[in-house]
Image (cartoon, rainbow, N blue to C red; front, side, top):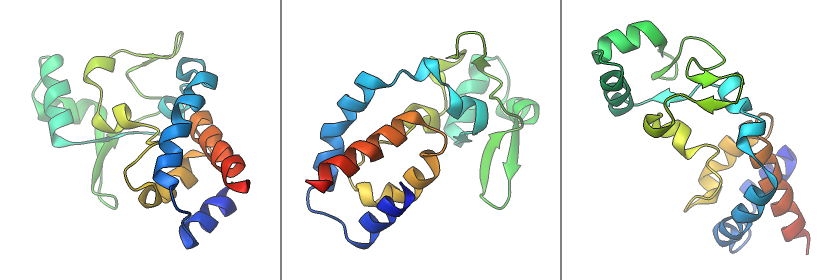
Length: 148
């Protein structure tokens, strides 16, 4: 899978963005995130300042209180991330997010399948194929479609 994505990076086929947009609904016919939740169990989202402010307000906390309680600032990546995994907002009995309506932007966009410039997200997909069945399925479908 990674070698296929590397090939796409070196030689982007025409219509790649259009293809991924067409394949995405087919992926979701086969994949149910609630049966997996691997992203919430093994990865951490990055939190924007707006995410922190919004979620902190939901809990009646200041952004500083929320950050101190739940987040760590990763200096290398320059990102706010969860202190622990699985995510503190994941209900492990049903794989549902307790803050779904106000979740971080990174979560709401995950797994970042269709993008205007798909080629700019190949590095993300190369990482996510290990964790996310939907990403794996999309890459698999891309591979099938581009063989023809």
